Amino acid sequence: MIRLLLRKELHLALHPTAPLFLALSAMLLIPSYPYLVAFFYTGLAIFFTCLNGRENQDVAYTLLLPVSKEDVVRARFFMVILLETAQLLTALPFVILRQTVLTEPNPAGMDANLALIGLALMQMGLFNLTFFRIYYRNVIRVGAAFLWAGGAVFLFITAAEASTHILPFVRDVLDTPDPRHLTAKLAVLAAGAGAYILMTVQAMRRAVKDFRRQDL
Amino acid sequence: MNGLVQVNSLSKRYPAFCLENVSFSLREGAVTGLIGRNGAGKTTLLKSMLGFIQPDRGEVRFFGMDFEGNQQRIKQEIGYVAGSFGFYRGKRLSAITAVTAPFYDAWDDQVYRRCLKDFRLDERKTPAQLSEGMKVKYALTLALSHHARLLILDEPTSGLDPVSRDELLDVLAQLNREGTTILYSTHVTSDLDRCADDILYLRDGRLTAQGSLRGFVSAWRDVSMTEEEHQRADDSLLIGCRRHRDGWEALVRAEDAQRVPGSVAEADLESVMIHLERGCGE
Image (cartoon, rainbow over all chains, first blue to last red; front, side):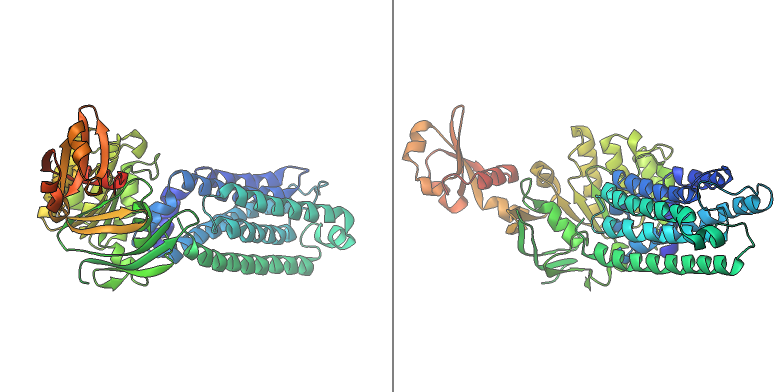
């Protein structure tokens, strides 16, 4: 059933801007830009999808199908994970391009390197944890969910990008071209992946519980 | 209590409304009308039955199975049709069907094609391009195409013109003749006069009457009185008494009909419901 629900998510629920926003990974080519912002657009696509779902009674339609309430939530999370993975995968060629051809450092913040991907994973995990915590308590309150999640991500981006100017470790080790300080960057990448998994799994567990109790 | 659907002691409390201890069963093959004025709790009841709302108390059983824990199997055999099909208004019907069909083990594409033809539905259109009547017909098409044993209809004729309404009632009558059980929630009681076998009457969240429609309606009489007859009448016998242009009208119990002056006539469901809701003279 999850496979069918995922199909429903992609064919009926997904907002048309979601695949278009993947192309915004190309923002990593901008010479001077806070690159973590490029990964925020996936969150925007998730917000649009949930907003669009509210206007099109997506939850009511899905609950009438022969599926459980729990699977409705899980399918939405799988779609989100798919979207976020796609965002990272589309970003990779641009990271490689920045590391091999357009090698100028990014004066605005973090360079497009492996540590950036690690930070992007943390950022997306944080978005999932904040957004779905509110959304699945009340699926009507999509705006409130986005406001809190957007706020949390904004603070994260500000802190992460500012740290490249303030913290010596970030400035001298993480905000450098690959493969310099590869071990530290791989550690950040692994920590990002771990944080993403932990936060997303936690968000899904809570969402299943909240959605089960919610009156629709 | 036996039946295709059994609802036992279902309760749900909100700050301003309470669905209280509702119990009933639906006979297999019957059309059961769920009536009550706006806000009586009809939608809350249907939503509680279908798992949209978490009841505070009570249990719901479909086809002998608890809804809780068996909802996937149960929903395979249920079709839900609301007054307006508001899902995915910008998507083509063909796209919605292509996603919906694989969920149902008993999906029958031949039935689906036949319904499209009979209802003159164009799959290339989107719900936004359909009239209210056509939206209901599309929802019905989806329900029929997976051979639903139970149809749950929530105000299906609310946005329909008289001709579309008539057509829909004909379709329901046909389905019922073929053995489909129907739970029909509406406040348009004339629809039920035409097709219902049984009745569930919700009032302020409580089930105040249930049983055969004929039995329910035949327990009451309409009385029309002149001014002078009204003055002579025993007020305690008159229910929902109201003044109209030429005199007074009220509802009385069938056994009291001879004790009230005025002209007495058979009551219909609408008249019974209106007078009971007005409650004047009770």
